[in-house]
Length: 453
Image (cartoon, rainbow, N blue to C red):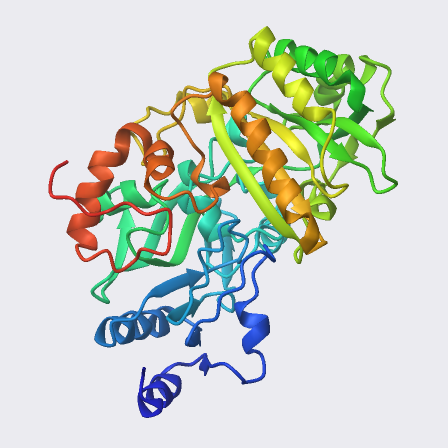
């Protein structure tokens, strides 16, 4: 139990204030994207800046509290909210400054992808930033950051220039290639294990209207679509990034979608996408020359907040004929009209040319990230959705590498945490020991501190 006087003192010391159970706004603040997560922090600290964050960290240590850190609240495992502890809420920290001359942007961790892209695109600039506009930029970047521009410009973490971090002892450190460079290495793929990021600086790239969108084929053609996808992605240029998977249209039709973006000239993009758009023929063709911000919200309606979600994800070694057969089998039925089903994200180009040890994100050599996205609205459907997801997962397991994408992980504990950090786990554990030896920051896909590198 925490004395009310201590809570009141914390609240008056913060520009953003605090919330406790029963107060107006408490339930909204503790609610995250995945409805399956229903946790009740003892205190929610609404941070307005780095000084607030540092004060919260010191308070958490003084009172021996479990601490969680919420940015966009999009973590499928709900790591941003804890039971009975202190939730450090960064969602109000939305400052952003674009420097068009230097092609950089300084952004605060409460920004969502959509908010970030809106500001950078005002100057005709962008960087890799996921594919769902409601996702928070900080958690996405700390876990790696796959997105439509990865082939040409690398991951979100590859475009990080510097970050300000409040560490477990309450210090505010600036990290970059020349300042606290070991910590800079760790935050680029190590998740929230090393502290609370209060500011992120990114490299930006010129980007105007793009040739992008999606083409839909009947779900029963999953095998043919994925075979075509395998051949098409085997030789695509860096400028072109593709995803494919099973989904249900708003009018209830099961389809195989192939979505993509070409970040070169729209005219060349039209030529690059022609084979994809004429294979079939398609049920629907939604490709066109559109703004990047519009493309970034393409999948928003398929992943709205307020539904129960259960995801599983892992990189696969490739798309063998057997893998395609199995993927197609999983695509034929889903337990809910809201379940997107099995999905593939192509990993290539600039993102794949970074050495595994150059950043904490190690999984550069695997060509596809495989995911299963289950979603439902009726709580009575939970068991069948969980069972179906796990069965499909087990069917695809023989084709998987020892490599998981941490941003898609459920609360799977240490075995998959190791898979998420791969060959860099030992170095990350030693870094954790240096910056967080008591594992104060453990509401994450955790790396336990260890002296041995």
